[in-house]
Length: 380
Ligand SMILES: *Cc1c(COP(=O)(O)O)cnc(C)c1O
Image (cartoon, rainbow, N blue to C red; front, side, top):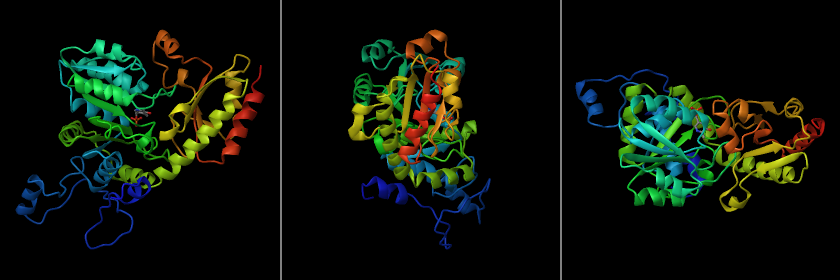
């Protein structure tokens, strides 16, 4: 391809029904595929690229996996029924019973629970450490450690991971690295190009972008993706064809959405930084060259009533997710980070006054005005 993101996001992968020249990819809403004879059936098992059964593979889910792989410049990719199942498949592609993971202590809440409450019961142990301190990461590595796992930009406080250093440490200790690139998207950073082995996305977020689908993708080294695909097939964690189709449709506008949302977010963050009703603005201003990302997290000042602020936001809805085209807000303490022990919440800086803003594609001036009005209305 051309190497240009804008072109690749549209033209990297298109599978079309033979003979019928549909401009858009058809939806292969089928649980299984037909064969003319046993030779053709045998061809499937010989890897000739035909399809057998949708849990095992489907043109729409393949289009999504391969499109994201192309955007991340990874060797291969596979779609899954959610971000969490993509993470599960990625982790189980590397780690088995009796082995160990070192993961960031500020992982997305659902990912934390997957490791802590589920994989733990199957004999896969995880040590959670702050990845901002690589000495602690190295100190947590044991003889049976197989995987380092962190996020390129963390939720909700937007710590930008030093991927080069994490990957260098993993290579030095012969470990596999898995990076959750959901918040950054391949527009801002491509962990695979930096040497990560596996990259996962909750496609529910920016990859799909329209808040109408739950989906996940794992991309990376061919041998590891073969393992991840086997896990998805055997665990029944496949994505449905229609969900894959919707996600691919959303993906076409990723460059436009993400660029506008990031620019709006930077403007909002800059404006709120100068507002005395906001105690703290979390935003990776200094990472400007690679883009900023479209999440802004703020901590309200003590003289602002948090609930009244939420109630005064007009067309900005309270939604416990992110990355849609509409600007939305969430309350991390009482949703995504609710299950963390109070000490962990306090240590991470997730207080009652912390508000996560997912900035949309509305006019920047309207977004800024809405937040300033809500701050004014919420002064105690
Ligand atoms: C939402 C999210 C997930 C989980 O994805 P689902 O699609 O909800 O399963 C994982 N990681 C990050 C960073 C997320 O934001």
